[in-house]
Length: 282
Image: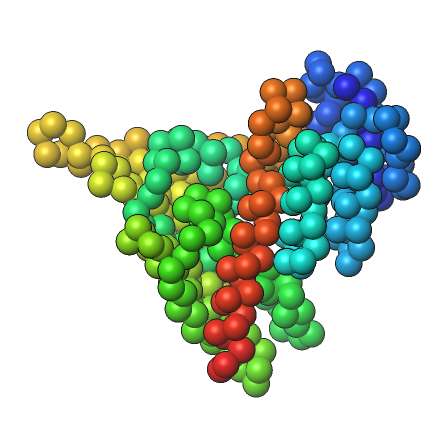
């Protein structure tokens, strides 16, 4: 399989190392331009500019399986077009939504396939000075996307309350209620004293708590004697990018959906738009 990496050379070289470890990869091409049709089998697009979805659409039209490495895009119309184009071209598209691609997240999803409750606490420490609202929002948007990947986009009701200082949004409390009575909540603050990132999921049989920063997971269940038992697993936070490449290549080989595809991104954009609709009232 021949793979093109589009983007800045230093970053591309790091991704090339991940690809070289895979036996299915025969050639890696680092380039700054869109490859010609039939010249490569797949592409990794390293692009966080406003033109990233245009470049992704070009790759799809050429029939090239594509992995976009960037902040999660939220342009609903563009994502809908990409979703339909990928389906029509039978092209696999993956987005670098790290919460969904992390080894700990994949393990949690295997253990609890349909949680009834999701609780997320996210605190980041920002430096005083000029603030980029988009960069701040990126943190909670990623958590909403993770919830949608786990529970789907059929959200019945959303409650969102921001913490604002002179119109600068520095925190957000979100509750998402589903038609099947599942509930997910996100508590986000950009005023943390340290970086805290905790995800907890549960169903009637077990609960899993994940320290997402250190990829440390605790699984809790009750045994036949009524005693609470704990199982702990540790994953390597540095392996996420490598795992994501492996899973992308696998999705091409066995013709399955990628771990976070265009439909997931589209559903996320719709829910995030509903959240923005609420918080802009304040």
